[in-house]
Image (cartoon, helix red, strand yellow):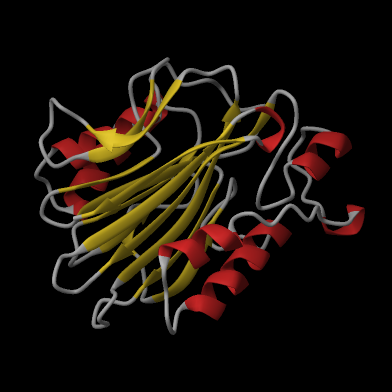
Length: 248
């Protein structure tokens, strides 16, 4: 997952609203959003190469999502980061307890940002930033740096989310994720991947023959526990492949 924007409003009628794009090589085998038969009540996409996921929900208000940290010079961790999302969704620990456990073995993974919540608390962890912590109420964004790092794509998507918060619906959330505008050269971050790649990765929605946005997911959580999800999946050059809609 390479971009997540979300509104965390614990006292609101819709306490959690999420719009997220997962960017990946099209050749990496993936299943779309669906129920996991081995874990009743868990809904997520699935990375068939490593077995984990990038975003999902589970019973008792559990939610988790992850983005990678873009750093071509970082050591490669021996374990898949996608298991960090799946393990929280399949477990019973509180968000902070879970992230504290993850912190003790963070060196097993390449750089990551991890969000986990249970309806009462939403917590964030990036080993490069500091210990796990609760997320403050508000509108936030994660790309491939740290929480709220002001990359142009994050600012554009976060602004789009703010514009639909008064009457949020999953269609509007997915619409803001289709923004294919690339940043100007002066706005691009320098993450060590070269100018052409920085430019390709600078849009909210990424499309190329080999790498791009594979899934766009919208999630709206109501205070009474109702949850609505809508996912669009994509293939090479941004070709639309399918849609999954859930109301739970």
